[in-house]
Length: 235
Ligand code: APR
Ligand code: ZN
Image 1 (cartoon, helix red, strand yellow):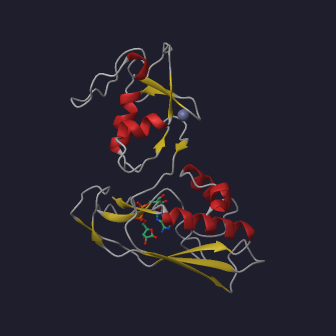
Image 2 (cartoon, protein in one colour):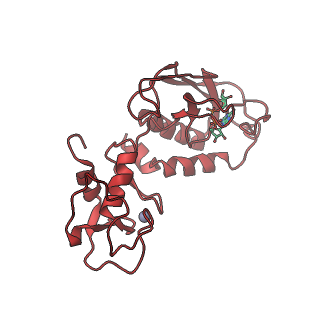
Image 3 (cartoon, protein in one colour):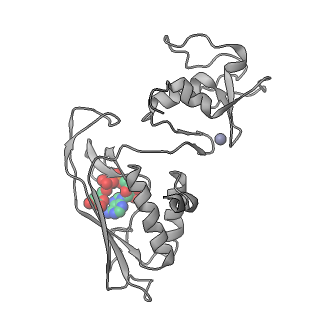
């Protein structure tokens, strides 16, 4: 995506629409047949056939300029996510700060998984200065509770989740910088939308075992970030 303008990135994922339906664009809530509600001063007038587009995979329609405005609001990584159905175009990446992810097998069983050992993942992110893509670039951020230890059963499904978490880490999707909903602290490292189990033998926080639905839930959360088994095989 390097060198591509936001408009060029968005257009890659769009098909032309000749006759706009009598519907509203769900980004700006204005009619698809009329102009985008996001006509910024820098937005030159676009030709009639180009003013709306259909996302190629999911088919949802939007004003081109609404999608461009949404793209500019994000971390501009060349990917686009349909705001209606969350279909991801391109490879979604996040703004996780630099750090380290390690894992190893420990010879103990998790509650609910008596027949296998346990994978322990250790994340370590030091406090530092916010970069581009963070809420307040140039300002420091804190990093509480690191190293953070997380647990998966060392069975087939658990190892599959681990491989996908390694992809999520490379794409900077596991943590973010923002306001912690637990502590209320702002400008700090927080979990992103992929839930981890941080308790080993107990379940005092709700982030522990047993939890029979956990592996299926995290697979869904990984999918929502664009990480599927097929992609994991390509790595
Ligand atoms: N373990 C795992 N996940 C957690 C925990 C926890 N102890 N606490 C919150 N989460 C989940 C929440 O359910 C939410 O979905 O992380 C997401 C973001 O919550 P925040 O409170 O904003 O995240 P953060 O500040 O990073 O987490 C707080 O997690 O690992 C611990 O040491 C960390 O005590 C801190 C807590
Ligand atoms: Zn869609």
